Image (tube, rainbow, N blue to C red; front, side, top):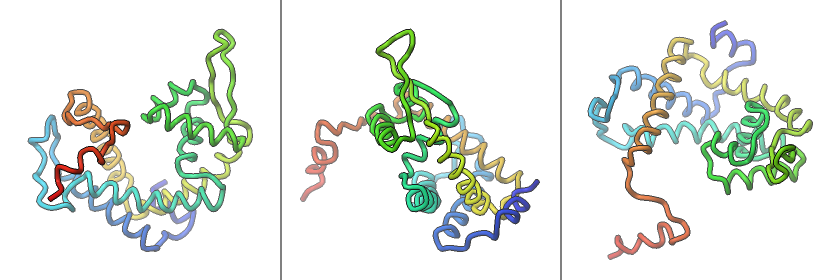
Length: 216
C-alpha cells in the first residue's frame, strides 16, 4: 500500500501550522538531497549561501516542529515526556540490556540515560533484573505497564507519521531515508577523525568560561 493510501485510512492530513511547516521543510530537504552528489568528503557538496541552506539549521527546524506534536501526544495523553517515550520505544525494540549498553545503543551519555530510566522506574514503566551470574550487574526492561503504554501510544505516533509524509511517495521517502542514513554515517566518520577539535566541558564552565573573549 502506498503512503498516500495509508494516510487516507488513518485520517485526513493535519493542516496545523506546525505540521505544515514540518512537511514543507522535509520536502525541501528531500529536493536538495536528491540533487546532491555522493560525498566522500565535503568537497562534493554545494556551498551553502545562507542559513537556510545549512542542513545543521534546517533539519533541527523540521525536527522541532514534528517532535512538538509527538511531545503533546506523549505528555498530555500518556503522562510521559518525549525523552521517556524514546527510552520506552528503544527498550521495546531491544528487549533487555544493561544501562551502559542501553546508553550506547541510544548514543546518549550514561548520566542522561540513568536519569531517564530512574524516572520510568518510579512510574512503574521499567523494571530492573539482577544478573544471575554477576550479582552486581543490572539489566533493564519494560514492565508489563510499560509494554501496555507502548502498545497504546505507538499507533498514535504511527498515525502522525503517516499524516506528516502524506503526499511523498514511497520512492521519494526511500531516497530521503537513505540520505539520512548516509548523513548519520558521515557524522560518525567526522567524529571518529576529530573533525571538530573543540570539546564540550560543562564541568569547566562551558560557555561561561569562553564567553569573555567576545565582550567589548
